[in-house]
Image (cartoon, rainbow, N blue to C red; front, side):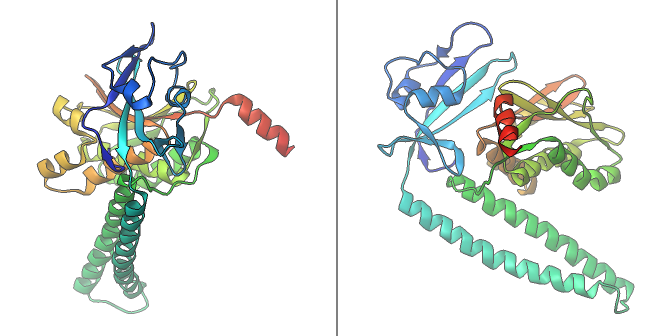
Amino acid sequence: MGAGSTAEAPGLVLVPTQGPPRLLGGLLLEHLGLQELPADVSSLDALLGAAGFQRRVGDARLWEKEDDHVLLAGEQPLGDGGRLFWTFPVAWDEADNRRRVRYLGMASHDLRGSLANIRSYAALLLNGRSPLEPKVQRGLETILRNADRSLSFSQDFFDSSRADLGSLACEPERQSLLPLLDAAVERQRAAATAANVALVLDLDPSESQPEVSVDGARIQHALEAFILYQLSRAQPGEVIHLRIHPGAPRVRVEVRREGVPLSDEDASAVFRREERAFREKKLEDPLRIYLARQEVEAHGGSVGVETDPSGSSLFITLTAVPGATLAEAAALQA
């Protein structure tokens, strides 16, 4: 989970589609400092708000009270439509956290600066102004390609490390999800074409698309991570669909691959960074998909995996901006 030192066991409450919420043990009430569940447990915001917690600015996973009591909290969608809310108490040392974030910033600056210089000079030599022998051309193209890959990996590594410290930079603004999906598809279309996989933005034109309050670059990165995960497991001729399922108060965005489904083992390990890295003997994709989870959770959202005989889906859920809020904003701008 990251974000400081946490207790070993979470506090849990099950919110089914029908019937009242059910506590799973007593730790959740202990974490919240309550004697009984509040009357309103319809959302994580309502539950934590009733106990006097507010989301920490800059990381929606963290909730704090005026007495410096900090909780890491989130929700997990269940297959039957229910939800599981969880909490962890966090031992937070703000001064130590700032030092570690500053250290990461210095390391990121030094590493990315060197890689950027390598990339710039390789691109300069490949600009076509000077004739190059075929072997030199191929060598420079390899340098450029690996510099880009290393820059992307280092950005993911430092962003994930900052997220572990509860300091992932996010600048949310109200916007439609559609442009983010469209941009993610276009950026990965060449990779899909090379793999002979169809990448389809599958939307119902008759449905109005929901708006959310998110950092667009973060959510687009998460969607591209999902696409790349599905591409790495796709067979030629398979199809990957991006879909939006509007709902209130949560909207679901799905990256579904039609084809051979994930095994139960692979499905359970999608977001387990260390387990996958050691098993697959590489960190690039496990880190990228784990950062996608951190980016979504930093917005108060959740991620999940579903499989069935015809394929597998990776999905995120985010809180939709209420229609009344949008109407009020439009009226103010008029």
